[in-house]
Image (cartoon, rainbow, N blue to C red):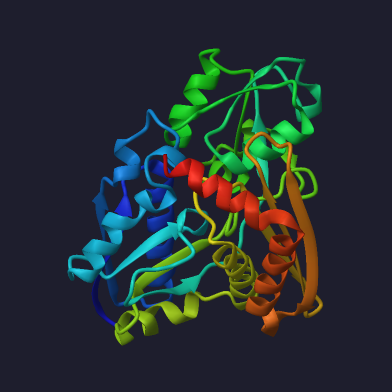
Length: 311
């Protein structure tokens, strides 16, 4: 296929890397295609002095990109799927997902090699309520402080001594060539990842048959199954930025295993469970797991967190 397509992207180095990666993949399978990036600044990029939970949530990183696509100013957008809310705007679709990179969270520190090696009272930076919940459950002695900004900004604040350690997504560090900064990759059993973490998704207009056809060769079906299970779990819970929600699916031998977690930001209350089934039942598995946690006591917790976030 030939012609030109425009990719809406945030201006952060990681977002640009992801957009350029998708552009290269597209041109590799469609040699006559021209791809142009359309960089934009989103509300999530502009507001960096407050936690996402207080300014409207992770959707702030993609709303302007979706508006540009719907207005015909761009053809598609490339996202870290952990930044994409469970419900997409009407008329939009995640047309393709790339093979998942490392889904784990990573500990980055100048002096310390592991989470267990941090001394009592160590200062650790993260803006994620999901990470705060699990950190406080594992290490209630740590001093957790909100940390926003792109990867470079966060690393700079660590390097200038504001923190003893910070938690970032391993995939983002590796994509930026910063994997060497990782001290410890936290296994899902220790720090359950965000829904969609490590997955690059490509969003376009649902009715745009040309773009969907161009994107089809980039689709990685096993990753799609895992993502569908995780997003169905989050959607059933009504997951928002005020809710520490985590989920991770793995597919092996045709069996999909999904682990999910809902907790309070202070880590004192945590509900977790897991389910397994066939990959074709991914959405049902996600919904089933969410229903289990809601029945176990997560429903009133989520209601309380939503009420608190509204004030």
